[in-house]
Image 1 (spheres, one colour):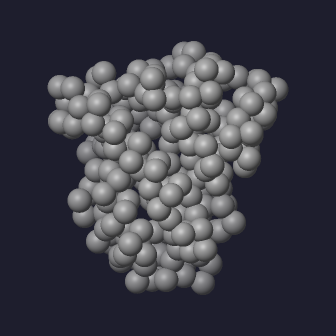
Image 2: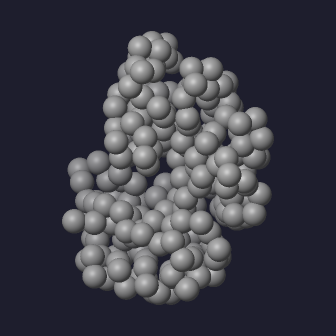
Length: 246
């Protein structure tokens, strides 16, 4: 497991909790708008933390922190993720997992074992455009052997599990889309709204350009335009909110 970043205290990553965030390197997507290029392409070069570094800090901060967010990259590419989360749970922390949804079997296993309390799952686009927006077309010859078709099948399975297979009395989930002017349109949200209809919460995140973006040069929609997408979606998904909008 490559631990490439550690935010020791955050009020943003785990809603309603003071938390720490662990960033794991490596991903089975190649989203061109990804903000974590280094974690995606060269994770071994940035693996500057050990598991013991993380747990030594979490043990010391139990009186101040209530949650831990595990993000990436894509955490579920690591087979030993359940063991890592179990150690966090042994310290009585709530756990939020950020994921692209390509490993539904692991998500179900973590849920059944009570090793996660919150999942934030990315919805990259509508199904008809998922391959392009998530970078599937660049994965066929990579070390990740799953085909784009199988990846989308897995994402669909994760969406169905979160909407229909979880208990809201003990578990929280959200879907979220980083909205990019060059990649998303009203038709994108028509497809997404139909797909995740009935979801408990959905966030539209404003794209932010930076030097760390995998493929720089994309642009954000205005706040008014994002509100227009949210209004369009609310008949299908009542709880739609904007995030990261200036």
